[in-house]
Length: 151
Image 1 (tube, rainbow, N blue to C red):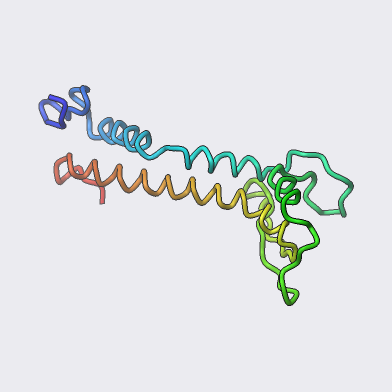
Image 2 (cartoon, rainbow, N blue to C red):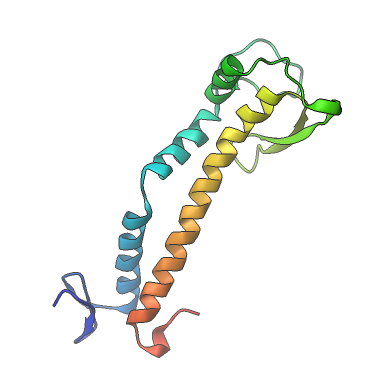
């Protein structure tokens, strides 16, 4: 009886008599555990590497204080004087929360790459959240009665 059956509620992975809400919760837990992997650790590391936690020289008024580990590492690999051709400026995101987020244009390749590191991390995490949500709802809808389905 390790499958989903209905007795006086739903049965799921050894847990009997689950309400539809409890069933949805346990399916979400299973789907989350199935989805999380090495990429997620990399995503979290990329996000944290983009936080301005290192002290730096004095900056102009209004500049974001500090620098990130990602910026330091990238500038050690890519020289800071390499610019995009034809004077092109590309947008970068600076800030750690929606409240402090700013779009700043840059001409330097190393600055662009360093500021892109946490963006890649957020993309990885957002992808996982979307996958977990989709798979949870699909799995739940396969199990429950028609009147209890989501969407």
